Length: 306
Image 1 (cartoon, rainbow, N blue to C red):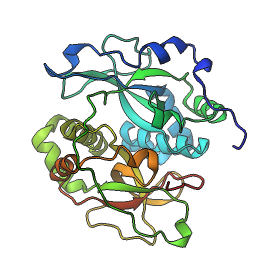
Image 2: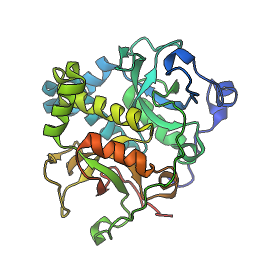
Image 3: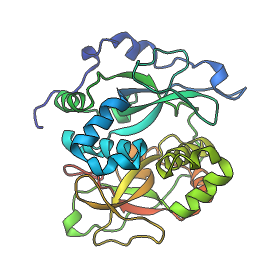
């Protein structure tokens, strides 16, 4: 997409919010007493479950019987592939005191904050804004989702933690076939351990299936470690070591992969905000597995490890 124009603040109807809300302090009842919360604004598409289910029935019907959480995971990966844009995430947006889109389904999480799910493509932070999608990529995403993008309040809004020392590790050399792929650092998903943890900590999620458990578990990691940059992705499974307990599956683009919970990647913009050792230890204790380097399945184009 060489030569494509980038999404700019001037192209958003809520242009004034981009500048006047950066330092806005959120309603105090959403956070424990005495904390100083900084609100993180994120830009993307709210979920229209009816439209997404219809899209899945037409494009990957075998997934539909597995439930909406699985549809959500496949739909997100399809969006990344069609737009050739790897920075799309599934996140929660705060629903309290804001205009919630009529198609969005509001749920109350374990911390008592009402949320609805959105596909985010960027946020009003320099590291994310520098990697924002082109206008062409946004148009592709709009066409597939069938909804207009907007600005939302990220569920991960919190006070940044700056405790030293930070994680210090380097990824192994890549095989020649994977040259240019993004290397990510995090925890592979051990389904058995995760279900055991969910049964003890949020049993209501267990009845809703493993993908709901996975989303709740990821949010729990963010909250307990006070580290917002935790996300789910797929790791390539061909010609690499697959850790015990990882479940290999064939994704919507025909690539063998297994799910991982990522906390950073070998790129300057992500590495500069990598977790502290204390935060990593908290996540290790909860995850019950050792972190490692993996190859991100959602890598499109050559990645420069600056």
